[in-house]
Image (cartoon, rainbow, N blue to C red):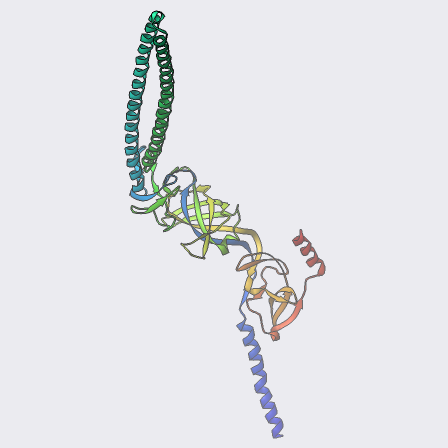
Length: 419
């Protein structure tokens, strides 16, 4: 009898304990009431406001030099005003040397022409002297009729010699004229090449002084190595943008996205803007362009960012150039649908299931999912509004029944997904 009483007492103590454990397990499972709401898959990335159209002044081609002067960032400049000065000592040295070479070449040309003219004059004098000798010899030949044969023969040979000398001097005169023209032409071509090099070098030196082509707001460019605004003392090179004069009529946002965010963003996605510097201002636009290749966040870094352009189609107040904007990019959006957290969906027997709260526990129920974000998923079938679902998987003792969607429903959904 005593044993029976002990057993009954033990049972009476265990039964409340068991029920209290079940109640405790039930209470320990957090639940969420399902309601119809709007689904939105969006991320927020910081962007920089810049003009769509602008005039850019860059470092001249084939130049590497040091910035000795640059206007203050954001200052207003007039047309023709100097906005940047670059120094290339080697270029100035080359220009000075070319000027000296040109001066020497022109002096050499003058000397050569004088020498050639003197040589020509000497040969020409010889030709004239020979002409006189020829004339004298011809006059002497008239008197040879009465001279002895030997004397006449001597005079004829002298005349022949004079004629040969005359032909030789005339040929030398012609040859000297050709040589003179060739020498002069060669020196003139050399001088012209020097002048062309001087002109090109002078144009390069002049191009080192950048002047504003029109009046406007001057915005300094970013250095390709430091990624900071260009300043005095920086080394710049060919085609590096130095100063930009933006047109303020059309603006855009330049967004730098991580590779993780970049792959989810698509051209045409809506963008909503807010501005830290202008708390009351708001803007709207769309993604217009995605860069195909990423850039390192800094020199020699393996971490890359990807540039994205977004239009600013409408805005309450036109933002200033260079201010930052919070860009909320909406990648997917559905109105009036059932949305639940990702953590409340579980995989059971190759099915997506949720645990629906019932009076005495939970019901395992198959659901079909639609579009999703990193945190939420749209439920297309299997749940109704006002039902409560578990946010963590309940203990097996609390799962009272199991509901699977009809085959026709899943087959229909699968056909839609395949299409």
